[in-house]
Structures are given as structure tokens and as C-alpha cells.
Amino acid sequence: MNRDLRKFLVFILCIFLAYSIAFYSYVFQSLEEDAEEIRVIEETTLPEPDKDDVVEAESLPIDETVVVSGGDTLGNLMNRLGIPVSQAQEAIEELTKVFNPRNLKAGQEIYLIYEKQPDSPAYDLQYLQLRPDFEHNIELSRKDDGSFEAIKKKKHLAHHHNHIKGEVNVSLYADALRSGASPKMVYDMIRALSFDVDFQRDIHTGDAFTMVYDTFRDEETGLERAGELSYAELTTQGKTHKVYRFQPSGGVPGYYTEAGEAVRKALLRTPVDGARISGTFGMRKKHPVLGYTKMHKGIDFAAPTGTPIMAAGDGVVEKAGRFSTYGNYILLRHNGSTKTAYAHLSKYAIKKGDKVRQGQVIGYVGATGRATGPHLHFELLQNGVHVNPRKVTQMPGTKLTGNSIKAFKNAKDKVNKLMETIPPGDSISDSKA
Image (cartoon, rainbow, N blue to C red):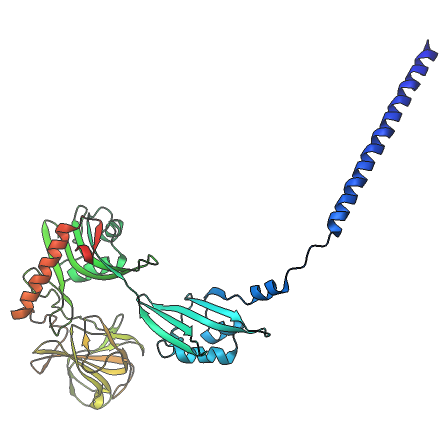
């Protein structure tokens, strides 16, 4: 019995081995055939591309947009693209007719088209375009004779009027932005109303505000630039303040009440931010340079050289130049009877005849003329007489008259019509206004 079982097991084992060998032989042969087929495919030689096609592809123009990095110049940007130095210089020389290459800024984009020179690793510049500011494009093209031509194109910008309305819940600034206003518009509104409203103490939850302002939109790129605040209204503690932007003929733009009265009447107490008073108005016991008693006709503000000096009020530059012991000197005429003077400047930011606005930088602190150190000597003259600037901070109110008041009323009516036409939070273009 045991012997028969052993024979049966041996028989089964022999059959299993036979089938295993047969299966292995079949699989091995299939793998060899597949490997041979792969070898045949790998060894198959693909047809070489037509040389004419390769030459044609290499000669196609390349268009590329490069971004200016810090320290980049137009010259080294073109040189990195393989454009010869002499050609780059020729292109830049033509560009300088419409654009100052020194005004190139980091982050600015430049679009170029260039193509390979025959039998040379270098490339020929065919076209260049850049945007120096929001309103213009600069284009440089290669003409048929191989020379370059640069032109400056003014972009078409869509002029839109915007109407914003809201209430103060968190803060005037935050809620105005939430209503759709830009930061510039909020700043302009605060500046225009700051002569009548104390924005630190007078603003409360529930106060209402309205703004009408314009924007300029590039429909091609979608970019938008804020224009000017045409109207601002703020109701606080039950009292409503309204101002309209208007520029009288021959004057500077400003904000006026509904009756045409200028809201900006005050003179800046301190035409230099962060300065300390180092000399007061009046008789001095001993002059620091001359050594004897002398009338000090203004106030001295000590500040580092180069500190910006601001115009104390709107006006016209009557004088800007060296003046006696005052050194570099500016005299502003604000109206028929009021003038302000600024002395010992290191340099000017304006010139004679310029119209300036209150807070505009007109020069910088220095120590020119008779001075012991860098400071601003500031004077206020009324009807030709020096007065203490610390005691007189109001100029006579300016009210529009004659043709100016007529023009103002027309401008005011236009703004009022815009508020009736444009739903709050919306805008319309000039063509629909």
C-alpha cells in the first residue's frame, strides 16, 4: 500500500515537472521574440529632417517680453539677447528722441522682436515696445533701409465718472474703501474737508459720506488710474459738509463750498515736518552771528539738510534765487496782501512764476547765506509788514466772483447731474454722462 502510494506521487511529480519545463520554454521564447522586435524598432533609422526646413525654422523671428531688473540698462538687455553692441547703441540713440533710457525702472516690461543674422550667431533687432507711463507707449521699428524709427503714442483711455455712497461702521477710511473708493480718493476727501471737520474727534458710527470722482481706464489691459475728486460730502452729528473741486481761470484747482467760497484759508503753522523751533519772532538780545541786538522777522525751524519744505498756502512763486544774507530764498504771493518767505535753502523744487498748492514741496532745508547751521527761516508778510507767523494762521477768505462764479455754478450743476444719473457704487463713461 505504501509502495503504491509512493509510485503514484512520483508519477504526479514527473507530470508537473514536464508541464513546468514546457511552460518555461514557451514564455522564454516569447520574450526573446519581443526583445528582437524591440531591437529592430530601436535600430530603425528615422529619416533626417530636410535641411531647408531647419534653416527656415532658425530664421523665423523671435518675440519675447523681458522684465527689467535692478541695474539693467537697455544696452545690456539687448546684448544678452545676442543683439550686437553697435546695433543696440543705434537703437538707443533713436529711442532717446522720445524716451530717456535713464528712466527705465525695475519691473518694467519690454517687448522685443528679433531674428537671427545669416551665417552669424548674432541677432537683428526688428521691433521694441515699452510703456514709460500709464498714458503712453514707446515703439521702435526697423525701417526698410535698416535704420530705426522711434515714436511715442498716446494711449486711448476711457474716462469714467464714479459715484460712491456709504456709512461709517468701522472707520471712514475702511468703509469708504469697502464702498469702492480708492485710497487716493479717501485721502483727497479728508484733505478737502479737514478745514471744517476734525477727523480725529468728529467722526462717529452712522455718519454718511458721498464721493464723485473720475478714473482713466486702459480698456486693452484693464489697468485704471485714479483721477480727481470732483465732489465730497460728509454728514457728521447732523451737520452736512459739501465741497466741489474747481479751477478758476488763471488759478490753481481747489475745493469750494456750494456758495463758491474757498475752503482752504489757513496757513500751515509748520512748513517743515518734524522740525523744532530754534528761533522765535521778535527782538533778540544777541544775534548768533552778528553779536548785537537785532529784530528777528520770522521763525527758525531747525532740521537736517535736505528736509523738504512745504508751501504754507496756495500761491505763485514771486522770487526764487539768492537774496542778500538769506542765501537761497523763495517768496510766495498768496493774495494781494499776504506773502510768505523761506530762506537758507539748500536747493529748490520750483522756479519763479510757478503756481503752487498748500503742502507742495518747494525746496529743501540748508544753511546758505548767513546761517550757523541747517534750518528754515520762515517769514509772513501782510501788506508788506512782517508779522508773527504763530499768531496769524488765517488769510482772508476767497470767494469766487464774476465769470469765475458762473463757471463754478456750471461745474457744480454738472456734478449734481452725475449724482442723479449714476447709481451709488456704479460708474459711467464720458460718452454716457
